[in-house]
Length: 465
Image 1 (cartoon, rainbow, N blue to C red):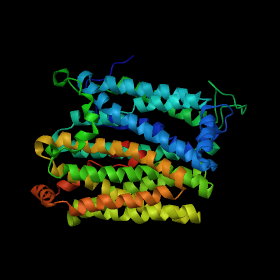
Image 2: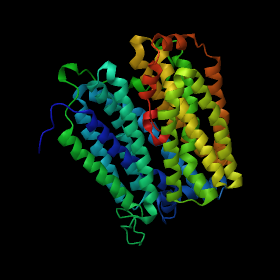
Image 3: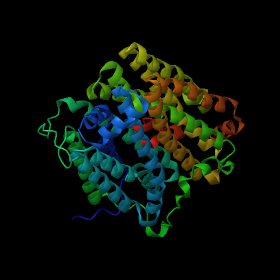
Image 4: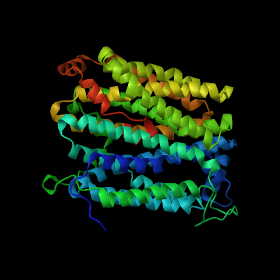
């Protein structure tokens, strides 16, 4: 096998991320149909859990059941991400980026292989567990980009990485939307255990992309971290939630982190239940849901890459962040109305407001954190900010799942609207002198910070956390 070159170019990292995230996000539009399939498998684990849930709470609506299980699965996946990502990042600091990427991509491939043969819900759970344990590629790739780029070009390089991630999270759901026209690999016999299933074709596509990525990294990805710059593995304390709000990170960082945690909890709840709302109230399948996800991703990317970058010097990061938060509240309420009105127009209108709102909020909020942090604590502050996002992506789906199940389809979005008021108040009432002075020190720095944080939001794009 040909050895990788001594130096890795940026395009290698970008292609690696793109391939990985296309395979990862292909499952998103399929979640409702996938859980219904396992729920209806006689004698399966999900069928037994569903029966127990119905008996305990006397709620017979099948959509509320699958929404509950889907939210719980998504929440625990993100919780595992929150715990293991610092470990993989620390390990890459010790043994190098290339080895860790090979390990995580290999684990992902193993997870997709299990999904191909997941005739039972237990095997599907195993596939998701393997994927969660291996979910460190974005953080390790970010470290590799930082290894390659000097301080002057790092923001531009991170912006290109964000674009590759965003493109991957648009392409993946688009492939998932094509599920209806994909040939089925199973014979329709309903075989359980280690067997092909109706979703084996998209799983096989994800597996092929992962294997291709593994071979590509093996052949083309040269180590970016020289041995003399390697250190010890970071401790698991980097995943300690109590350390994410330390005042030593910067005078305003704890307040901004709290605002981001509340925002991400609300938005992740929306994302985790959207596919179930669309199936429940509109009768949508993976194709319709995938098209909506692509629209949301494109709308957010265009907002960040076009509108926000042009407005930031006129309005400042804080005002754009407040505008973004202000758009989220009516967006959630419009989607809550879908539960009663069953209107695709309302769903698209609400989702578009959310996409534009998050497009305004995500890059500006991270820039505010950077401005607020002391120069000596930039890495720690941004690390705490991303960890807060990961924690919100774990809490949001769990809370939304309980609300959807216990109170009905519209409840998670009303709760998200109410929850979004608190980060609005936190930013409005926060002292802004520190932010203004940091931004004023270098006019135009805001654009560089925004460029470094272009991405598609939330669960569809983990780099937002």
